[in-house]
Image (tube, rainbow, N blue to C red; front, side, top):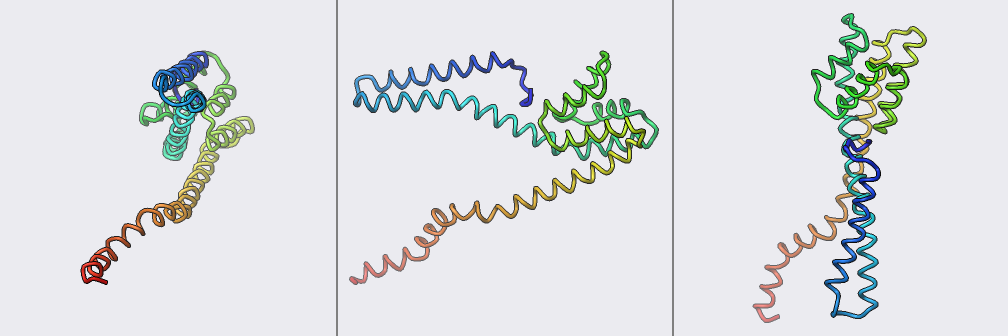
Length: 215
């Protein structure tokens, strides 16, 4: 559910079972008759581990990508909610307007939550389930603030405005953090790939000239 896949846990475990069974079998077929038994067992064990963890890595990648998309869509979506609420719409009508105007994984989750509320589920449970289902901390904080505002009779539009500003600040801080990490991440390719290539380009002709001159 967090990855946004129409897949049950049993289906995912079936995929894991298939990959962890097929990959080792392919290794045994390819290694049959070639190499020692020890090497065959090592490759078989490595293929088994790959078959177990590759689906988990794929699922984890889908989850992270979807969470980033939801996190990116939150400030703009709730700006529209805030404007709709301040224009006189109810909170449900404001969310319906966001669902119609914005296309993102967040609006997909919001549409599901709205359907649950229409079917009789309480808004608090539906929204808390949405925040748990997505696993996005910013959304969980925003949902909790909206629920508390409704319970205490505080203006929902004002709460959304404050939380949206907080989300924008956090997004800016995350971008700055990634920018600060960039030089460290660039160090390895610079040292092992770019600097040697530059050295060859600069020093290569000189070395060739020295060798041709007989030194």
